[in-house]
Image 1 (cartoon, rainbow, N blue to C red):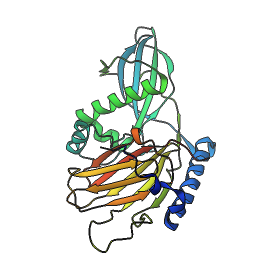
Image 2 (spheres, rainbow, N blue to C red; image 1 turned 180 degrees about the horizontal axis):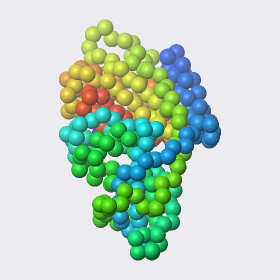
Image 3 (cartoon, rainbow, N blue to C red; image 1 turned 180 degrees about the vertical axis):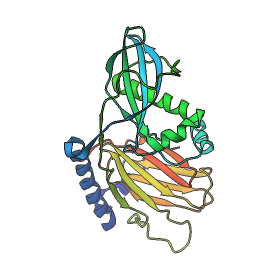
Length: 289
């Protein structure tokens, strides 16, 4: 669980940043610019034709709604977790698991009775779709995430009571979709980044390996490798506006890193991955231009 406690202001002054931190800031700002350019550049998108999978019937205040769950190999797969690992994450209300999806535009169709309805195409990775076919748990999870994603994107209120059509793999026609073809830019590995007033200790807790990258112009993700830990029990995490400090857990690890961007501490979240990694999602207060 992320702690939004702000650290001492004197530790956040830009003039105290080390040479490594200054270099990281330069790379991070450059990557942010590249990401923003990619979002507005047509050459960075790819047109795909999703393949039909199965169709869900539900409704909204405006009438019948059908969701075509499709798949394409061009969409990246989610993290490779077992169902037990994923279930544990969900039970602990952790946000470390995402299912990449492409949400298509609404299209008007006619149902079997000739009545008007609305259909949406939602595409996931093809390999993940084949895995989902053999798992009721994954299928229900995808349906829930797809419904919530459509609600957020199009300001809908869909009935959570829905059913899978047995003899109809899709409603209407499945349109082509545009997806971003460029992978997110990796920023820089920060395993050897130390605060200027905290010299590298010869003994004591180990400095874990840290990766940072931009998931979007206003979202920074951190991945901290913790191979000696089986869980998050005993870990402490403090996030300031431009600082991340992690400690605890039998004093095995300690990390104190400058983040040269303004972080929204209150909205930051952390989750311990079963592959012995701590994942931290940090929304940004100020996006570099």
